[in-house]
Length: 305
Image (tube, rainbow, N blue to C red; front, side, top):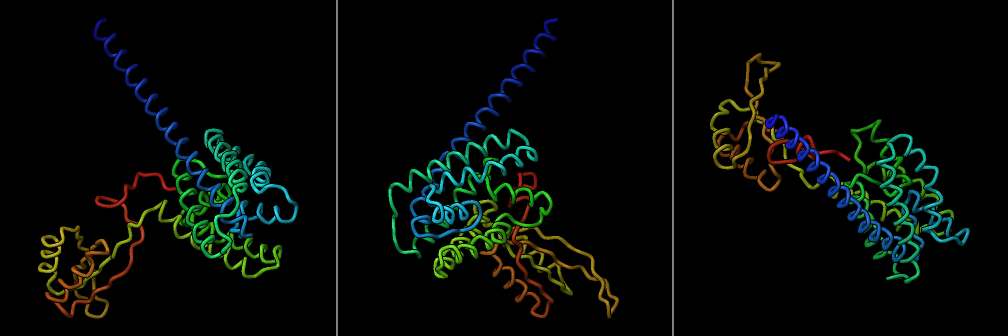
């Protein structure tokens, strides 16, 4: 009986610990969402809206409608998001959509509040640079916290379910291009639209960095008549992983071992120098690797946004 009681007690402790850990994680997520919503609201209210830069998505549409209707941009953002949030609730469930409703409401509120403070700059170029960078950071933090700011964020998340090979920033770039084009017509100013396009480009590039990190590397394929010397130096001097692949020459029919090596960009030149020193005529292919999972890089089991 005592042993059974002890077992149940340990199980209860483990359940409580997991519940507390989940609660702490959710609180942390909501704190991050709050901070990100303030940054997003500042990007729109202080930089983009005052300079009539409509960067795409619901935010861009709201800035355009603000000019046409006079309603506050943050209010328009929330109203447009209502039907989109309903679709999100149906597709992703209430746990996801509750944090998204929270994020959308805060973003709309802070956008209106920041707009009352007036523009930080009347120059559209620094406004585009600052606004695009701040939006990217805010969106990345919200996405990593398991929510979105509503609007095309949810649409992009739906597209990611169907096309997981496409990156989030690239999808935003495609959907936002339509809104930027419409802004040129609404404001009657092609310069404003071009600056808005700059916001989209900055947002797209920085968003992928925030979400996926700069883990780019070089992928080397080396076909050598004496691969052991090259491999030995790669292992000893650079301490990188090396894999042998089996290959057969189509013309000669000879069996060969192909060296495959993934190495961080800053060390790639050293690997190339080793090949040149050991066998200058070795057939070598050097290409880029934008995402790498495994030891020394990202975890394959980390959730992709």
